[in-house]
Image (cartoon, rainbow, N blue to C red; front, side, top):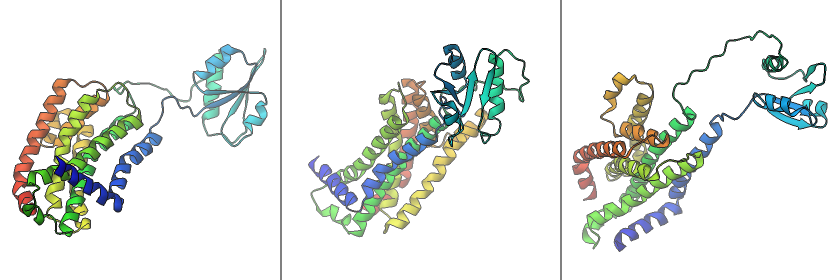
Length: 329
């Protein structure tokens, strides 16, 4: 264990010296923050209405159903500001809409419709609006984006392993492992441990920043841990055979193809064609992580998908084992 920790400590020291570990550790947080800013909020409204402080509460409550209501003392001053805010003045005889004249097209008609309904007037709607529930319980961008980033974190973990191995090759230290007390298994575990930690850390960062609530973290941990082996094996297979970082990263980019194909295939393919993705461990990871984030997963599904992922990973390892062994020799 001491030798494994020494290897990890050396990788951290080396990675922080050229900012590699810091960049890869900051990537999940940065991407999650960007996604959070892009996710549309159900509570946001493009219609903003200003009313006087003494406006009847019943009217304010009605308007808040459709728009963001701002109570002000000087309604005209508020409407004349740069943003799109309408004024609504209500007295005993009529309801008046106050505009600046440069508001977004269509919003005036929308507010007229809302006021007209409250005033029990007949106003022809310019469009017919229908709502269809297609099963989403949260923003599609949030659930699909989070799933994509969690799976890509496994690739970042493999990339960290890859770059650490390339540095060892450039320093001519891999071949020296055979004549040191450190066993090859200890070297492999030590080199892979930091990649696994980065993957789990990145997954936790995405889930916390995007605000997923009520999910089973144990299920998520098992699923992410299983898919992490694929990234680690690919990282080792490329890292031990590459002589410089640029070529290694270019080779690692090939992995993005099956990742994106699996995720977008799962999203867009009809159910009857999903079977063509069964070969990909990334599809099985996408399938179970999506249900975990939606709080719909069961332990049976988690164990089944993780088992399939590990079986596919074992087959990949068998195919790449000789290449990895030769690279470590």
